[in-house]
Image (cartoon, rainbow, N blue to C red; front, side):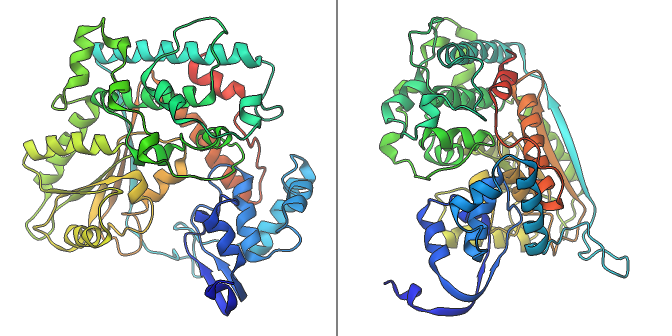
Length: 460
């Protein structure tokens, strides 16, 4: 028996407890095996995708009998009104909830924070950008149409999963390369369209909304971890939906699409758009807006109190792109992403927070900036792109809007007009409503992504 399991601890406090939400992962299993007299699970996002996220927390807390999967499925997560009522009772008896907006008995806020404003910037694609986006959108739409034809429109992922989803099978690396580098252009049903094809094409479609140069590069490993694309098919759906989770794996470098495969032939006939893929220097709408706000902030800065900003993107390549523009504009900046060593990361954060002559801008990947960073030196945060999981965006926003912040905070969010991003926003709201319903004891509503949700993304 491992040493840690031999000890009976007085108290175990699990910080960032949502990290064990995948009940089959080694981390989750090991954490639940620890022995203690009392247990606490601390998290700001106990539910990110569906009700199943709650089960590992109950298992860790030893809430018998609901810490057993069979009991959980039979009496709680059973899609019935009684199941919802039992969950609400469980949450009410176990949860000690504190939010930024709560007030104490004296009527004063429990946590005194400055004002936080949220601004949504609606971005419009240029003519050339629209040409590339529309072409990619139509190809992705064809892929999904083929999927519907193969599995039948009457099938709903909430009730009857198609064979490729219901059977938990890893996605071969070859399928990923094919999905990332080739488009499904055969309108018939002869092709075996998999969920992985749709997800990777959706990933590329979202990159279109951010910066077209991202389309030319191979998808980096951090993005695949973020998206869950090299996981089981059922997990892939869960990362963009409200589907059940299974096991988590991390993709190896050999599983990532090759750069040659990324140079899709779909652009060969479209020379103006091809040029767009080759340039990092072109100022796309988000970048123009960010630079405009940064310039305004710089004019308000003083030597002792500079207005600093944090820029977040789920695409590490996008951080490289915007870094070039910041350098050209004369801004001091640092980058924090998955490959940055912890010591270097902490030094960058320290300089950003405490040194008025230090970095004016901090570039952070969504994966690296979600937890564990205190960035109260910044008062503006830019979310350049939208993720399926709104909890990740909320966690990134909480890096600057937290205890210790002395300045008013502004969160900038970008939505590309007439694109898939507008529809992602609707799915984000559904997930937020689910989490809010459980935590407040209200109606949890729909739990999983249906074919109707996917059809909404493609206007079918």
